[in-house]
Image (tube, rainbow, N blue to C red):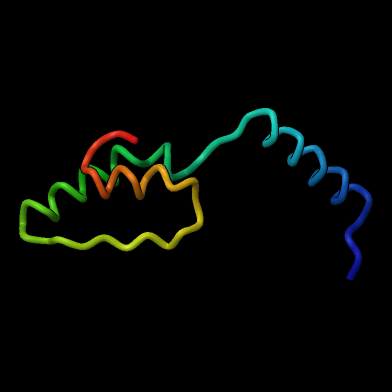
Length: 68
């Protein structure tokens, strides 16, 4: 199935917008993730899993317990 012209144009515009305004879910939600990671560590947890589909900033924060 081929994409319609309007779909192709919309995706192209979205791509240009994202290029001008980069945003990372990992960076945006890192404080919340770190809060929960500290709670898990305080209750004896010692491991975290990173799926590996981001910038790596959150992984560094989890590894060191602080900002990148």
